[in-house]
Image (cartoon, rainbow, N blue to C red; front, side, top):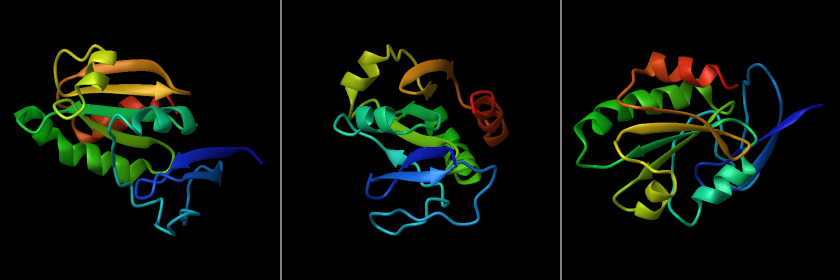
Length: 143
């Protein structure tokens, strides 16, 4: 059976799950937390590449900053989309103020910016605040 790899948002352990159209339960093999809660990973320079290299599901990254009004406005939408799509999509946030090297690596010039990665490679990017529905529709193109 085909499988996916999903990084636990709590302990960062890589979990291999059978590929299904929907999940009723999925627990982390490391910490036992539910992988269906859709918790967003707040990545930093030490774990960002680890997540991109290990997740086989699409990874959507929200580049944001705490002082950014549109970023704060979109945050609940990003979290809701994560709850709706876990574990079929990995949701990650990168604070550009705390991780300027990651923002520079990807040429982030405005925030919020969402980048979708597949197999560690950028496949799409969009700037500006989006609704939950817009985020889910965007991600669905890359599943």
